Amino acid sequence: MMMSRRKSTEKPEVSTAFHVLHKLPPGDSPYVRAKHVQLVDKDPNAAIVLFWEAINAGDRVDSALKDMAIVMKQQDRAEEAIEAIKSFRNQCSRQAQESLDNVLIDLYKKCGRVEEQIELLKQKLRMIYQGEAFNGKPTKTARSHGRKFQVTIKQETSRILGNLGWAYMQQGNYQAAEVVYHKAQAIDPDANKACNLCMCLIKQTRYTEAQAVVDQVLQGKVLGSDEPKSINRAEELVKELEKCQSTTKLMSSNSFELNIEDAFLEGLDQWMNHQWTPSRSRRLPIFEEISPFRDQLAC
Image (cartoon, rainbow, N blue to C red; front, side):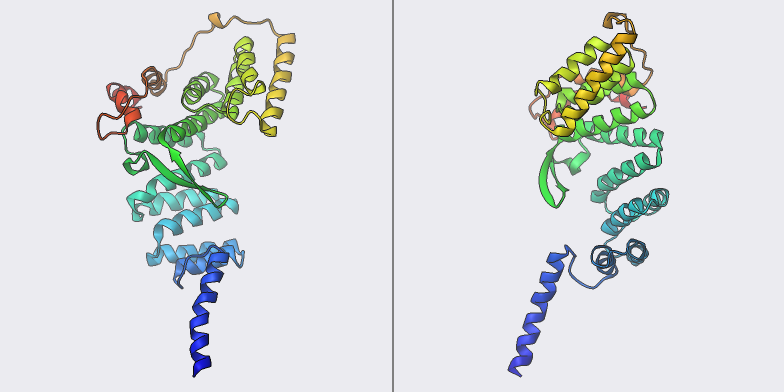
């Protein structure tokens, strides 16, 4: 009887250790079984079937839908994942919507659905302007490679603007991309966005400005400039500049005329002319000055 009692007390410890080791949620529900098949058995297709079972059973639908969409993307079933999120996100909590939007943006990007990607990125920016992002909090906890860290509203705004700029570049709309990257760099500059801004300027044959931007990376003046990937890209951009300058007459930046019809970008430009101000109301402080321009942002 003593041995029997010992075994019964040791089993939960083994089970807990197993779940911790494999980063599995505790229990034996449809969602837990799906995660086991995904992470331990490493059978993505079987995991997708079990995630569907969890969603239909109402078991941790927030996590099940998000995890299933991510696995589908990894299995080149991104279109299915998009339809799944659109069909079942109404069963998820309000807190899960922002995370689902982030997954949806990645799926649109993978599928080349740039217009939808741009529209969703704009929607996320509007939410920030209106103080609705992060569930009204100034920061949120994010995860990357198993590590938790805090993200501020400013950092999130710059990240979304960077993604929006990249989407405009995929459309060949380098004027719009340039405007967006300038705004992103004014908030939270980094080497990756600087290189993208440089490319936008090269595509518009504005080589002097492009050189000034890439020099900031080469001189280590922006975050991430010391990373090998950033250094290599900056050096490639310099070669591209030299090639373009040897074959094309240098255009004065003064002769460039911005012609963007997108009212969203015009509103963004006006908003960025205002300083980030201390908190004076319940609205997130950095967006208090956006109110006069909301009509312009609605596109």
